[in-house]
Image (cartoon, rainbow, N blue to C red; front, side, top):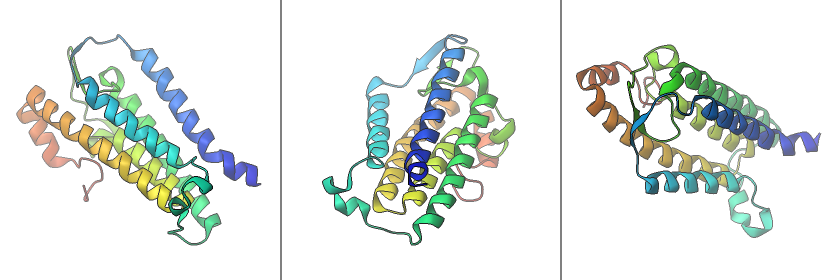
Length: 193
């Protein structure tokens, strides 16, 4: 059973990343990009994600303080975290499907860019970020340790920066339509954020 616990989260995250790559290649080139965020911004976000992910795999002897337990009952944390992670990643996949050819890994404006307000976009402006953050939150709950909290915080900061840049670009692209849309929707979590 320990082998299951050890490999569950790596398997879930690898499956998610493989899907994400396949989905990206399926839509690459469907709409021309007219504006893309600077490379430095993309590189910093990638580094933040890599550091966050590596925190889940770092051996305890290298940094024992990262293994400080913040939540009791490791078994309950594991299963609760597993459910949260799966729900979050499935939510991100749903949002990605709804976004269709407007999706991109980077903050971009595409030719004939559309403002999508269907599916999860009815209530949340950035549901992919919400899903990914929820996935990291679930992984953090599953570990119940300081390293999970740090990983979640790193991903939150990286996505918050990306969200702010994207919001600015969407306002300049769609004007009052986006301003009105943002008034009736949450950025990440309805009634909270």
